[in-house]
Length: 80
Image 1 (cartoon, rainbow, N blue to C red):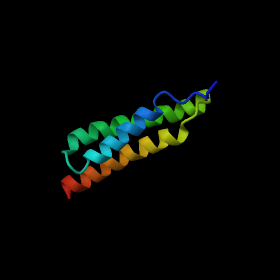
Image 2 (cartoon, rainbow, N blue to C red):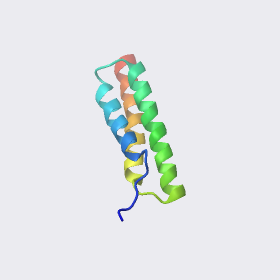
Image 3 (cartoon, rainbow, N blue to C red):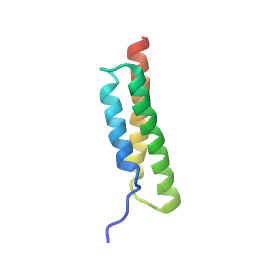
Image 4 (cartoon, one colour):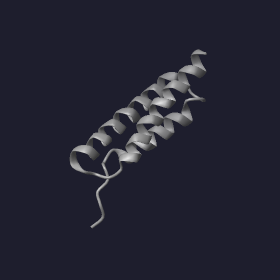
């Protein structure tokens, strides 16, 4: 039986990559929504890896960091 991955790990990574890709081209409101959702899903997935022993800790951390990075880049591009 394959080992179970945290349910929100891959969606967090996808949302983080999407937020990072949109950070340069779209306004900060949409990037803020995508980045925050990536960060929150990544945090929850990371918590699930610790609490329930799921795999996918690196995916969860990467999604959360990409989401936060997208927010920072968006603010630098649009406010700076």
